[in-house]
Amino acid sequence: MNGKHGRSAERLGAFARRGLRPGSPAAFGFALLCVGVATLLRLSIDLFAPDAIPYATYFPAILIAALISGLGGGVFALALSALTAWYVFVPPRMSFAGWDVEHSVSLGLFFFTAIAVVWIADRYRAVLRRLDEEEAYRKVVVEELGHRVKNKLATVYAILRHELRGHRDVWESAAGRLRALSAADDFLVAGEGEGVPLEQILDLELAPYGSASVIKHGARLTLSGKLPSVLSLIVHELATNAAKYGALSAPNGTIDISWAEDGDDIVVDWRERDGPPVTAPEKRSFGTNLIERSLGAFNGTAKVEFAAAGVTCRMRFPKALAAG
Image 1 (tube, one colour):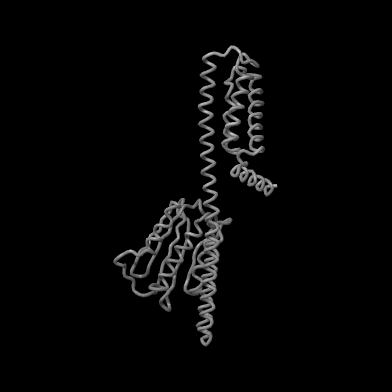
Image 2 (spheres, one colour):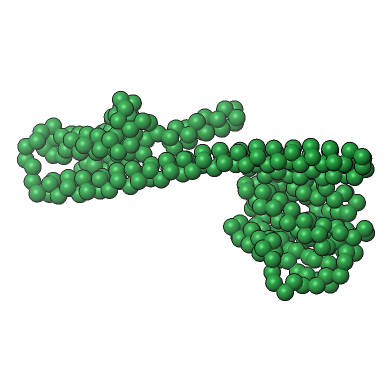
């Protein structure tokens, strides 16, 4: 039952976002339905409060009509609402006689407010259209980039296999790393899904360097939204630097990664051990800046330290983005 309700809610949400084609019979029919429902609601209020504001129930009807049916539907609902309320609920009822200044001001205020509602709803629809277009474009670009990356990796794979055909051990090591890099790229392109375990991110990015070089501590932790992709990029940058200059460049070097709750946050610690002597660079590199800025969008932080015993990095982000 929950699955059916979930799918129904998704379809309803998609309909509300997409709306009806402006100017179509369906759009005007939906606007007419909104005004009809507003009129019935106002008639029910009339049973116990006949002196209530005559136009009150029509504002949400106009807003919904404009959001779903577009500008034309909103204007149609506005005009129909004004005419219906004027004729049915403004005394003397069912008549256009006896119009006075008070009624004129009331109708004028209704028109002014309703026109503002229709205009805002139309601008909102325009923003949604642009967002949908940008999202569709982003998906196409991501798919194309993923396809190109796969093609380039396949080309590199083929070239290395040919060049290293006489060095089987070297080839097997290089091929394993290429497969791990390909898996990490697949993960980044795959999208948000329903969450990704932190350990899976670490395994994908660190697999090319061998399990003996990596020590992991922490309870199962699933990350949601775009955070997995960002953490994957951070770990990739740390691992690449460690392989070039740090612990992973030494025969006995290791990476110790631990994660735990700290109040309302999750803290992930990266520590390199038994690698070459570490000296802080005179100038912070692009990679270091990338690491330290990436979690800002999630109200998180990342701090890289060039300690003598090995590079460390502490990452912190809200616990609300994770689940055990």
